[in-house]
Image 1 (tube, rainbow, N blue to C red):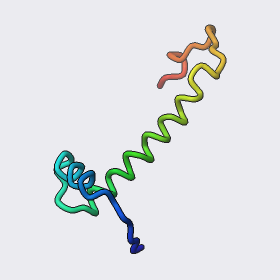
Image 2 (cartoon, one colour; image 1 turned 60 degrees about the vertical axis):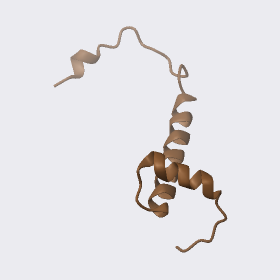
Image 3 (cartoon, one colour; image 1 turned 135 degrees about the horizontal axis):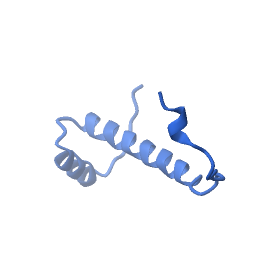
Image 4 (cartoon, helix red, strand yellow; image 1 turned 135 degrees about the vertical axis):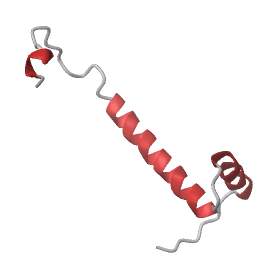
Length: 64
């Protein structure tokens, strides 16, 4: 899908240099992947401490 975006050129060039990418497209795609992954991690962290722990559960018993 072709998209025209006005992107901060200096920021894009810095990301290109820091990431060691060869193209702007690779730089932007990696940045989008990193953003999506961070958002998913934040979503998972919202559940931290939300589940009841069972002291009597023996996880070793269910290993094969």
